[in-house]
Image 1 (spheres, rainbow, N blue to C red):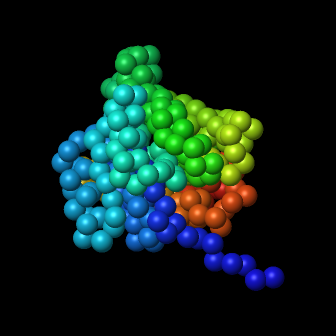
Image 2 (tube, rainbow, N blue to C red):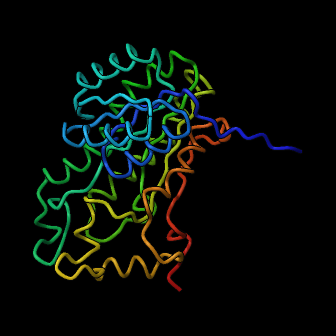
Length: 274
């Protein structure tokens, strides 16, 4: 049996929330290099401009839109801009998210002292932002009768990490919502609308660098070294490591993958520590 090469995203219109971030922008580059049209949706004009310049250098057809994933009116206005520019939405990647020091325990801050608004911030941007963007852009995908929603979960969703209770809980909610939305879309709209998630392992980003790298020495923190010791491949992920899995989940080559959360973690989730 000959397996066809169906890893094709040519001319697909893919909206990426948090698309100016480290991981989101890398996904945008991968999709664009492989013929897709990308819409970068994020807050912060400077980051949007920098991402746009990088995509322009790669000759990637793209649109940048400034909007908050927590503001439905801004998301609806952004969706209208996408439809005006491209006429449809083929895929949504919910990459907006992150942790906050205000929801992180450390030597000076116990769990009992963490403020409620720190939890709310992390839960909102990771979980509620995923829900709202899926509602707004998902309607356009339903109009097409086919398409992909790809959420960004985390290793924390499988086994919560120490120090970051809000982020772990928020990503667990994203994984659960991914499964729920997959069933809901198939049962109520179309079996050709697929919903999946990726669960990145440990990637160095601006949000977590302070936890993993000692700023004064440039060496791994105790936490960073522990992660490396428990990752069979012995390194942190590079943003590029996400690209092939993302392309696969967006393309027809994964047409029977639905409601799944795919680890991209260098073996971290497979290692018992012994």
